[in-house]
Length: 238
Image (cartoon, rainbow, N blue to C red; front, side):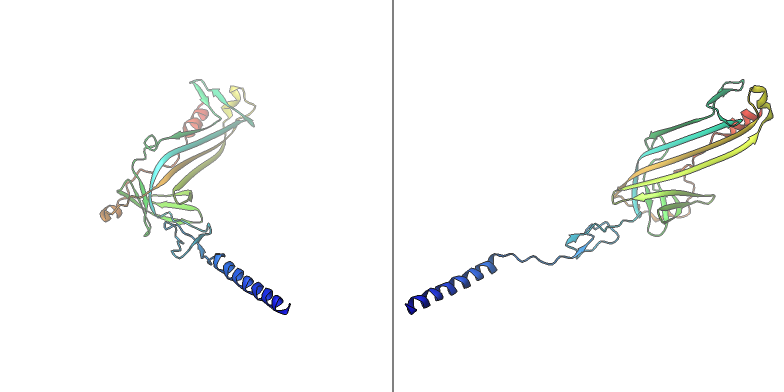
């Protein structure tokens, strides 16, 4: 009887050992990964990373191709404290209050070619016209000889959006408006315009160093301009 028990015990031990060995062989070992940015175009690319943790950040440096341009405009005119949509001052109907948006192709907005931002602070337009630029806290400033143009700026690996805004508020009194039926001649005009340029990243690189320095005659960017001077003159001449 003892021999039988010993035999069964030995078989059980051998079976358990084999089962344990089999489990150790078949159970895969999960390697410990390195988390980080795995996109080589990112500024914080980690070549050793095996797990992308979504931390990739990108730089504005590179070549961008405009894809569309949107212009948003609005103006509100009040006379004697009331908003006036339109009025005929005697020489044709003047639109005094309006708002609207228009999307154009880059060619319709007089933007031809690409724009490039270099690592050494140059902004190059259409491969030739050159200005300086700075970028900080989502704001891009194009620095020309005569002025600075400020853009709200966002970009990803593939897309860039630049928005330039201008606004104007003015108030004056024109007594002659009383003769046209207004309670008094107090006038206020509030106007705003915005230009948004949408771009996609391009793989081209401008290698002509001579084109990068000293040429600031570009007309690639045009500041939004208000057409309120004519309106103010029309009102004051009545």
